[in-house]
Amino acid sequence: MKKAKLNQTSYFIAICTIVYFASYMTRKNYGAAMTEIIQALNVTKDEAGLVNTGLFLTYGAGQIFSGILGDHIAPRKLIFAGLVLSGVCNLLMPAMPNILMMTVLWAINGFMQSLFWPPLVRMMAENLDKENYNRACISVSMGSSGATIAIYLLSSLCVFLSGWELVFIVCGAFGLLVSGVWLFGTKDFDRKPAAKTAKEKKEAAPAEDNIRHISVGKLIAISGMTFILIAIVLQGMLRDGLDSWMPTLICETFDLSSSVSILTGVIMPIFAIISFRVAAFLFWKINNEMTCSVVLFAIGTICSTLLLPIYSRNVFISILLIAVTTACMHGINLILITWVPRYYARYGKVSTISGIMNAFTYIGSAISTYGFGALSERYGWYFTIGTWIAIAGVGTILLVFNIRRWRKFAEAD
Image 1 (cartoon, rainbow, N blue to C red):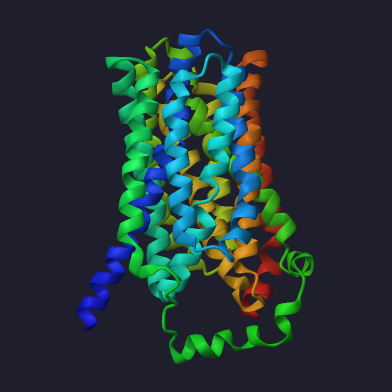
Image 2 (image 1 turned 30 degrees about the vertical axis):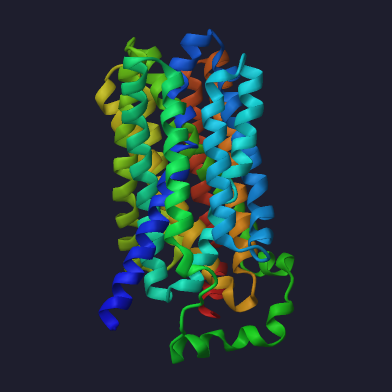
Protein backbone atom coordinates (compact mmCIF):
# COMPACT_ATOMS: atom_id res chain seq x y z
CA MET A 1 0.00 0.00 0.00
CA LYS A 2 2.84 2.37 0.84
CA LYS A 3 4.47 1.69 -2.53
CA ALA A 4 1.20 2.33 -4.32
CA LYS A 5 0.84 5.64 -2.49
CA LEU A 6 4.38 6.62 -3.51
CA ASN A 7 3.61 5.78 -7.14
CA GLN A 8 0.40 7.81 -6.96
CA THR A 9 2.29 10.80 -5.57
CA SER A 10 4.93 10.57 -8.29
CA TYR A 11 2.19 10.33 -10.93
CA PHE A 12 0.45 13.41 -9.57
CA ILE A 13 3.69 15.42 -9.51
CA ALA A 14 4.41 14.29 -13.08
CA ILE A 15 1.02 15.35 -14.40
CA CYS A 16 1.27 18.73 -12.64
CA THR A 17 4.66 19.19 -14.30
CA ILE A 18 3.24 18.25 -17.72
CA VAL A 19 0.37 20.73 -17.48
CA TYR A 20 2.71 23.54 -16.43
CA PHE A 21 5.04 22.52 -19.26
CA ALA A 22 2.07 22.97 -21.64
CA SER A 23 1.18 26.34 -20.11
CA TYR A 24 4.68 27.62 -20.91
CA MET A 25 4.55 26.18 -24.43
CA THR A 26 1.38 28.20 -25.09
CA ARG A 27 2.69 31.36 -23.40
CA LYS A 28 6.43 31.68 -24.09
CA ASN A 29 6.19 30.92 -27.80
CA TYR A 30 5.55 34.53 -28.80
CA GLY A 31 8.74 35.70 -27.11
CA ALA A 32 10.71 32.92 -28.79
CA ALA A 33 9.36 33.80 -32.24
CA MET A 34 9.42 37.57 -31.75
CA THR A 35 12.66 38.15 -33.69
CA GLU A 36 11.13 36.54 -36.79
CA ILE A 37 7.78 38.33 -36.27
CA ILE A 38 9.55 41.72 -36.22
CA GLN A 39 11.16 40.96 -39.57
CA ALA A 40 8.17 39.24 -41.17
CA LEU A 41 5.61 41.92 -40.22
CA ASN A 42 8.06 44.83 -40.51
CA VAL A 43 7.17 46.26 -37.10
CA THR A 44 9.35 48.04 -34.57
CA LYS A 45 10.73 46.34 -31.47
CA ASP A 46 8.56 48.33 -29.09
CA GLU A 47 5.45 47.48 -31.16
CA ALA A 48 6.36 43.79 -31.07
CA GLY A 49 7.15 43.99 -27.35
CA LEU A 50 3.72 45.45 -26.69
CA VAL A 51 2.14 42.08 -27.56
CA ASN A 52 3.93 40.33 -24.70
CA THR A 53 3.31 43.32 -22.45
CA GLY A 54 -0.43 42.81 -22.97
CA LEU A 55 -0.09 39.17 -21.95
CA PHE A 56 1.94 39.95 -18.85
CA LEU A 57 -0.49 42.64 -17.69
CA THR A 58 -3.57 40.42 -17.96
CA TYR A 59 -1.65 37.43 -16.61
CA GLY A 60 -0.47 39.36 -13.58
CA ALA A 61 -3.85 40.97 -12.90
CA GLY A 62 -5.56 37.61 -13.33
CA GLN A 63 -3.41 35.98 -10.64
CA ILE A 64 -5.35 37.52 -7.75
CA PHE A 65 -8.70 36.85 -9.43
CA SER A 66 -7.66 33.25 -10.13
CA GLY A 67 -6.54 32.75 -6.53
CA ILE A 68 -9.91 33.89 -5.17
CA LEU A 69 -11.83 31.93 -7.80
CA GLY A 70 -9.76 28.83 -7.09
CA ASP A 71 -11.06 28.80 -3.51
CA HIS A 72 -14.66 28.46 -4.74
CA ILE A 73 -14.41 26.44 -7.97
CA ALA A 74 -12.77 23.04 -8.41
CA PRO A 75 -9.15 23.92 -9.38
CA ARG A 76 -8.94 20.95 -11.73
CA LYS A 77 -11.73 22.42 -13.89
CA LEU A 78 -10.20 25.90 -13.85
CA ILE A 79 -6.89 24.55 -15.11
CA PHE A 80 -8.66 22.56 -17.84
CA ALA A 81 -10.63 25.62 -18.99
CA GLY A 82 -7.52 27.80 -19.01
CA LEU A 83 -5.50 25.34 -21.09
CA VAL A 84 -8.29 24.78 -23.63
CA LEU A 85 -8.90 28.51 -24.16
CA SER A 86 -5.17 29.23 -24.28
CA GLY A 87 -4.80 26.58 -26.97
CA VAL A 88 -7.56 28.24 -28.98
CA CYS A 89 -5.85 31.65 -28.64
CA ASN A 90 -2.65 30.13 -30.01
CA LEU A 91 -4.43 28.60 -32.99
CA LEU A 92 -6.06 31.97 -33.81
CA MET A 93 -2.79 33.95 -33.57
CA PRO A 94 -1.67 33.43 -37.22
CA ALA A 95 -5.07 34.68 -38.43
CA MET A 96 -4.66 38.10 -36.80
CA PRO A 97 -4.40 40.81 -39.49
CA ASN A 98 -2.04 43.18 -37.65
CA ILE A 99 0.06 43.70 -34.53
CA LEU A 100 -2.81 45.48 -32.72
CA MET A 101 -5.14 42.50 -33.05
CA MET A 102 -2.29 40.19 -32.03
CA THR A 103 -1.86 42.30 -28.88
CA VAL A 104 -5.58 42.00 -28.01
CA LEU A 105 -5.64 38.24 -28.58
CA TRP A 106 -2.42 37.67 -26.64
CA ALA A 107 -3.79 39.72 -23.75
CA ILE A 108 -6.80 37.37 -23.68
CA ASN A 109 -4.35 34.47 -23.66
CA GLY A 110 -2.62 36.04 -20.67
CA PHE A 111 -5.83 35.96 -18.67
CA MET A 112 -6.45 32.33 -19.63
CA GLN A 113 -2.92 31.53 -18.52
CA SER A 114 -3.57 33.09 -15.11
CA LEU A 115 -5.98 30.25 -14.37
CA PHE A 116 -3.08 27.80 -13.93
CA TRP A 117 -0.79 28.68 -11.05
CA PRO A 118 -3.02 29.49 -8.00
CA PRO A 119 -5.34 26.48 -8.61
CA LEU A 120 -2.31 24.26 -9.21
CA VAL A 121 -0.75 25.38 -5.91
CA ARG A 122 -4.01 24.57 -4.15
CA MET A 123 -4.20 21.10 -5.70
CA MET A 124 -0.60 20.34 -4.77
CA ALA A 125 -1.15 21.59 -1.21
CA GLU A 126 -4.30 19.48 -0.82
CA ASN A 127 -2.83 16.28 -2.26
CA LEU A 128 0.77 16.37 -1.02
CA ASP A 129 2.48 16.54 2.34
CA LYS A 130 5.07 19.25 2.98
CA GLU A 131 8.07 17.25 1.73
CA ASN A 132 6.37 16.18 -1.50
CA TYR A 133 4.95 19.67 -2.00
CA ASN A 134 8.49 21.07 -2.02
CA ARG A 135 9.53 18.32 -4.41
CA ALA A 136 6.59 19.14 -6.67
CA CYS A 137 7.53 22.84 -6.72
CA ILE A 138 11.03 21.99 -7.92
CA SER A 139 9.63 19.58 -10.53
CA VAL A 140 7.08 22.08 -11.85
CA SER A 141 9.76 24.79 -12.03
CA MET A 142 12.02 22.47 -13.98
CA GLY A 143 9.09 21.65 -16.23
CA SER A 144 8.73 25.34 -17.09
CA SER A 145 12.42 25.53 -17.94
CA GLY A 146 12.15 22.35 -20.00
CA ALA A 147 9.27 23.94 -21.89
CA THR A 148 11.35 27.04 -22.55
CA ILE A 149 14.09 24.86 -24.05
CA ALA A 150 11.50 23.03 -26.15
CA ILE A 151 9.83 26.21 -27.38
CA TYR A 152 13.11 27.77 -28.53
CA LEU A 153 14.07 24.58 -30.37
CA LEU A 154 10.60 24.29 -31.86
CA SER A 155 10.45 27.97 -32.85
CA SER A 156 13.83 27.81 -34.56
CA LEU A 157 12.74 24.72 -36.51
CA CYS A 158 9.32 26.13 -37.43
CA VAL A 159 10.79 29.45 -38.61
CA PHE A 160 13.35 27.55 -40.69
CA LEU A 161 10.76 25.20 -42.24
CA SER A 162 7.78 27.49 -42.69
CA GLY A 163 7.44 30.65 -40.65
CA TRP A 164 6.40 32.04 -37.29
CA GLU A 165 2.75 31.00 -37.84
CA LEU A 166 3.62 27.31 -37.49
CA VAL A 167 4.94 27.92 -33.96
CA PHE A 168 1.48 28.91 -32.70
CA ILE A 169 -0.33 26.14 -34.58
CA VAL A 170 1.87 23.41 -33.10
CA CYS A 171 1.75 24.86 -29.57
CA GLY A 172 -2.01 25.40 -29.69
CA ALA A 173 -2.62 21.80 -30.76
CA PHE A 174 -0.28 20.56 -28.02
CA GLY A 175 -2.15 22.62 -25.39
CA LEU A 176 -5.49 21.11 -26.40
CA LEU A 177 -4.02 17.60 -26.24
CA VAL A 178 -2.61 18.11 -22.76
CA SER A 179 -5.89 19.62 -21.53
CA GLY A 180 -7.59 16.28 -22.23
CA VAL A 181 -4.81 14.37 -20.48
CA TRP A 182 -5.19 16.66 -17.44
CA LEU A 183 -8.99 16.41 -17.24
CA PHE A 184 -9.14 12.62 -17.37
CA GLY A 185 -5.85 11.97 -15.59
CA THR A 186 -6.59 13.93 -12.40
CA LYS A 187 -10.11 12.77 -11.54
CA ASP A 188 -8.86 11.12 -8.34
CA PHE A 189 -7.05 14.25 -7.12
CA ASP A 190 -9.86 16.80 -7.01
CA ARG A 191 -10.36 18.13 -3.45
CA LYS A 192 -8.37 15.40 -1.74
CA PRO A 193 -6.50 16.89 1.23
CA ALA A 194 -3.31 15.14 2.26
CA ALA A 195 -3.22 13.59 5.71
CA LYS A 196 -1.19 15.71 8.12
CA THR A 197 1.43 14.38 10.47
CA ALA A 198 1.24 15.14 14.19
CA LYS A 199 3.97 17.75 13.73
CA GLU A 200 2.10 19.47 10.90
CA LYS A 201 -1.11 19.51 12.95
CA LYS A 202 0.76 21.15 15.80
CA GLU A 203 2.26 23.75 13.43
CA ALA A 204 -1.17 24.45 11.94
CA ALA A 205 -2.86 24.94 15.33
CA PRO A 206 -2.31 28.73 15.56
CA ALA A 207 -4.21 29.16 12.29
CA GLU A 208 -7.35 28.01 14.09
CA ASP A 209 -7.55 31.00 16.38
CA ASN A 210 -7.63 34.76 15.94
CA ILE A 211 -4.33 34.83 14.08
CA ARG A 212 -6.32 34.21 10.89
CA HIS A 213 -7.95 37.61 11.28
CA ILE A 214 -4.72 39.54 10.77
CA SER A 215 -5.17 41.65 7.64
CA VAL A 216 -3.04 41.22 4.54
CA GLY A 217 -1.85 44.82 4.93
CA LYS A 218 -0.57 44.17 8.45
CA LEU A 219 1.17 40.97 7.35
CA ILE A 220 2.88 42.87 4.55
CA ALA A 221 4.11 45.44 7.08
CA ILE A 222 5.45 43.06 9.74
CA SER A 223 7.23 40.77 7.27
CA GLY A 224 8.81 43.51 5.17
CA MET A 225 6.77 42.37 2.21
CA THR A 226 6.96 45.82 0.61
CA PHE A 227 10.69 45.32 0.00
CA ILE A 228 10.02 41.81 -1.27
CA LEU A 229 7.31 42.92 -3.70
CA ILE A 230 9.56 45.61 -5.21
CA ALA A 231 12.36 43.05 -5.52
CA ILE A 232 9.91 40.66 -7.20
CA VAL A 233 9.06 43.33 -9.79
CA LEU A 234 12.79 43.82 -10.45
CA GLN A 235 13.52 40.12 -10.86
CA GLY A 236 10.49 39.81 -13.15
CA MET A 237 11.90 42.61 -15.31
CA LEU A 238 15.24 40.86 -15.69
CA ARG A 239 13.95 37.29 -15.91
CA ASP A 240 11.43 37.83 -18.69
CA GLY A 241 12.98 40.94 -20.23
CA LEU A 242 16.33 39.27 -20.89
CA ASP A 243 14.61 36.07 -21.95
CA SER A 244 12.45 37.93 -24.49
CA TRP A 245 15.09 40.24 -25.92
CA MET A 246 18.32 38.23 -25.95
CA PRO A 247 17.65 36.64 -29.41
CA THR A 248 17.00 40.12 -30.85
CA LEU A 249 20.14 41.56 -29.23
CA ILE A 250 22.23 38.71 -30.65
CA CYS A 251 20.58 38.98 -34.08
CA GLU A 252 21.18 42.73 -34.36
CA THR A 253 24.64 42.82 -32.81
CA PHE A 254 26.22 39.89 -34.63
CA ASP A 255 24.08 39.90 -37.81
CA LEU A 256 22.84 36.32 -37.38
CA SER A 257 19.70 34.90 -38.99
CA SER A 258 16.53 34.98 -36.90
CA SER A 259 16.36 31.17 -36.70
CA VAL A 260 19.92 30.96 -35.36
CA SER A 261 19.31 33.83 -32.92
CA ILE A 262 16.16 32.15 -31.60
CA LEU A 263 18.17 28.98 -31.03
CA THR A 264 20.54 30.86 -28.68
CA GLY A 265 17.64 31.17 -26.24
CA VAL A 266 17.92 27.46 -25.44
CA ILE A 267 20.90 28.03 -23.16
CA MET A 268 18.98 30.22 -20.69
CA PRO A 269 16.49 27.63 -19.40
CA ILE A 270 19.35 25.13 -19.09
CA PHE A 271 21.02 27.54 -16.71
CA ALA A 272 17.67 28.12 -14.99
CA ILE A 273 17.44 24.42 -14.16
CA ILE A 274 20.90 24.62 -12.62
CA SER A 275 19.84 27.72 -10.67
CA PHE A 276 17.03 25.81 -8.95
CA ARG A 277 19.60 23.41 -7.51
CA VAL A 278 21.89 26.30 -6.58
CA ALA A 279 19.01 28.05 -4.79
CA ALA A 280 18.17 24.87 -2.87
CA PHE A 281 21.84 24.48 -1.88
CA LEU A 282 22.08 28.12 -0.76
CA PHE A 283 18.97 27.77 1.37
CA TRP A 284 20.31 24.56 2.92
CA LYS A 285 23.50 26.46 3.87
CA ILE A 286 22.04 29.86 4.81
CA ASN A 287 18.44 29.07 5.83
CA ASN A 288 17.21 32.57 5.04
CA GLU A 289 15.25 33.36 1.88
CA MET A 290 16.30 37.01 1.81
CA THR A 291 20.02 36.27 2.12
CA CYS A 292 19.82 33.63 -0.62
CA SER A 293 18.08 36.11 -2.91
CA VAL A 294 20.68 38.78 -2.13
CA VAL A 295 23.46 36.42 -3.23
CA LEU A 296 21.68 35.69 -6.52
CA PHE A 297 20.88 39.35 -7.17
CA ALA A 298 24.54 40.22 -6.53
CA ILE A 299 25.72 37.60 -9.03
CA GLY A 300 23.27 39.02 -11.58
CA THR A 301 24.65 42.53 -10.95
CA ILE A 302 28.22 41.35 -11.51
CA CYS A 303 27.35 39.47 -14.72
CA SER A 304 25.44 42.44 -16.15
CA THR A 305 28.36 44.72 -15.35
CA LEU A 306 30.80 42.38 -17.09
CA LEU A 307 28.46 42.22 -20.10
CA LEU A 308 28.48 45.98 -20.71
CA PRO A 309 31.99 46.35 -22.22
CA ILE A 310 31.98 43.11 -24.22
CA TYR A 311 28.39 42.53 -25.42
CA SER A 312 29.28 43.53 -29.00
CA ARG A 313 32.66 41.81 -29.12
CA ASN A 314 32.12 38.16 -28.23
CA VAL A 315 28.86 36.35 -28.93
CA PHE A 316 29.61 33.33 -26.74
CA ILE A 317 30.60 35.27 -23.62
CA SER A 318 27.65 37.62 -24.11
CA ILE A 319 25.18 34.73 -24.27
CA LEU A 320 26.82 33.13 -21.22
CA LEU A 321 26.61 36.28 -19.09
CA ILE A 322 22.99 36.95 -20.06
CA ALA A 323 22.13 33.31 -19.34
CA VAL A 324 23.71 33.40 -15.87
CA THR A 325 21.94 36.66 -15.04
CA THR A 326 18.59 35.25 -16.14
CA ALA A 327 19.25 32.01 -14.24
CA CYS A 328 19.84 33.98 -11.05
CA MET A 329 16.46 35.64 -11.51
CA HIS A 330 14.82 32.21 -11.93
CA GLY A 331 16.43 31.14 -8.66
CA ILE A 332 15.12 34.26 -6.93
CA ASN A 333 11.67 33.59 -8.38
CA LEU A 334 11.71 30.06 -6.93
CA ILE A 335 12.69 31.36 -3.50
CA LEU A 336 10.33 34.34 -3.28
CA ILE A 337 7.29 33.09 -5.22
CA THR A 338 7.29 29.41 -4.23
CA TRP A 339 8.95 29.14 -0.81
CA VAL A 340 8.15 32.45 0.92
CA PRO A 341 4.31 32.12 0.77
CA ARG A 342 4.33 29.00 2.94
CA TYR A 343 5.19 31.18 5.97
CA TYR A 344 1.74 32.78 5.67
CA ALA A 345 -0.11 29.46 5.97
CA ARG A 346 -0.68 29.88 9.71
CA TYR A 347 -2.45 33.17 9.00
CA GLY A 348 -4.70 31.50 6.43
CA LYS A 349 -3.33 33.81 3.73
CA VAL A 350 -0.98 31.59 1.73
CA SER A 351 -3.13 31.62 -1.42
CA THR A 352 -3.72 35.36 -1.28
CA ILE A 353 -0.04 36.17 -0.71
CA SER A 354 0.98 33.77 -3.48
CA GLY A 355 -1.39 35.47 -5.92
CA ILE A 356 -0.20 38.95 -4.98
CA MET A 357 3.47 38.01 -5.31
CA ASN A 358 3.01 36.32 -8.67
CA ALA A 359 1.06 39.34 -9.90
CA PHE A 360 3.98 41.61 -9.03
CA THR A 361 6.35 39.35 -10.95
CA TYR A 362 4.40 40.00 -14.11
CA ILE A 363 4.18 43.72 -13.50
CA GLY A 364 7.95 43.57 -13.90
CA SER A 365 7.64 41.32 -16.93
CA ALA A 366 5.16 43.68 -18.59
CA ILE A 367 7.41 46.69 -18.00
CA SER A 368 10.51 45.05 -19.41
CA THR A 369 9.11 43.28 -22.45
CA TYR A 370 7.95 46.63 -23.79
CA GLY A 371 10.48 48.86 -22.03
CA PHE A 372 13.69 47.08 -23.00
CA GLY A 373 12.59 47.02 -26.64
CA ALA A 374 11.75 50.72 -26.55
CA LEU A 375 15.02 51.59 -24.79
CA SER A 376 17.14 49.64 -27.27
CA GLU A 377 15.20 51.20 -30.17
CA ARG A 378 15.88 54.75 -28.97
CA TYR A 379 19.16 54.58 -27.06
CA GLY A 380 20.83 51.34 -28.14
CA TRP A 381 21.79 48.16 -26.34
CA TYR A 382 24.64 49.75 -24.35
CA PHE A 383 22.21 51.98 -22.46
CA THR A 384 19.69 49.11 -22.10
CA ILE A 385 22.32 46.84 -20.53
CA GLY A 386 23.17 49.69 -18.15
CA THR A 387 19.57 49.59 -16.91
CA TRP A 388 19.98 45.84 -16.25
CA ILE A 389 22.91 46.61 -13.95
CA ALA A 390 20.88 49.23 -12.08
CA ILE A 391 17.87 46.92 -11.70
CA ALA A 392 19.94 44.05 -10.28
CA GLY A 393 21.84 46.41 -7.98
CA VAL A 394 18.67 47.94 -6.53
CA GLY A 395 17.22 44.45 -5.96
CA THR A 396 20.35 43.48 -4.02
CA ILE A 397 20.21 46.55 -1.78
CA LEU A 398 16.47 46.26 -1.07
CA LEU A 399 16.70 42.70 0.17
CA VAL A 400 19.81 43.40 2.25
CA PHE A 401 17.69 45.87 4.25
CA ASN A 402 14.99 43.22 4.73
CA ILE A 403 17.14 40.31 5.98
CA ARG A 404 16.76 41.04 9.70
CA ARG A 405 13.02 41.76 9.59
CA TRP A 406 12.34 38.66 7.52
CA ARG A 407 14.38 36.46 9.88
CA LYS A 408 12.28 37.68 12.81
CA PHE A 409 9.04 36.99 10.93
CA ALA A 410 10.14 33.57 9.62
CA GLU A 411 11.37 32.36 13.02
CA ALA A 412 7.92 33.08 14.49
CA ASP A 413 6.45 30.46 12.07
